[in-house]
Length: 274
Image (cartoon, rainbow, N blue to C red; front, side):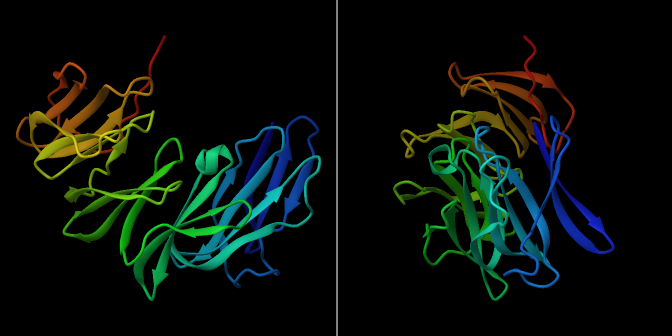
């Protein structure tokens, strides 16, 4: 078992990799003094999915912008210095362990002089692929299986045009032209369904037939979504007006059960106890 963490000492940020079996500590170069910008700090730190070849990847930046993405193998066969995967100016950078067929991949949203730009992906070989053209991507999210990215284009007053782009084929699908950014659309665990609010109604899209939408009978502004971790036919939905409360929705049978009458806004964590 290995634990990676960042410490700050005398204003300097350092990445450490601690081996719980050997009690050894490896100090990692974060990019400072190499090709990073002065003042950059670690913004996110992630392990790669393979336990047989442990490796870390992280982003550096400052002032709300990501400036570079790095990668380094540790342990047996590890490298002494990190590898720069890409550098530039990005509004958003999110890593997915399941991206690139389970090897891992980053999604990046470019920065165009303070305006959000297009989405690109970068894998651990440093290959950068542009996934959209001419967009102003405000919010982007990975699908759980790492094969798709959903995003909002041109958000106004909390509503935006909602797309999903397949990173393997490059196909960009318009899901709806007016989708609420709060709460964010939510993926089912199997990445086959996505739920979103249009401000007054909740709709579910089966991505195997993206032109087909299921509109829930429940009226009201959604405040939270949470899919079951084991099935794509059940989710918890909270509404703030109309028919306020927390509901368990069965999309297969088209039924709803009210769990609570309280208005709720925030994250819902679904835990199944065997």
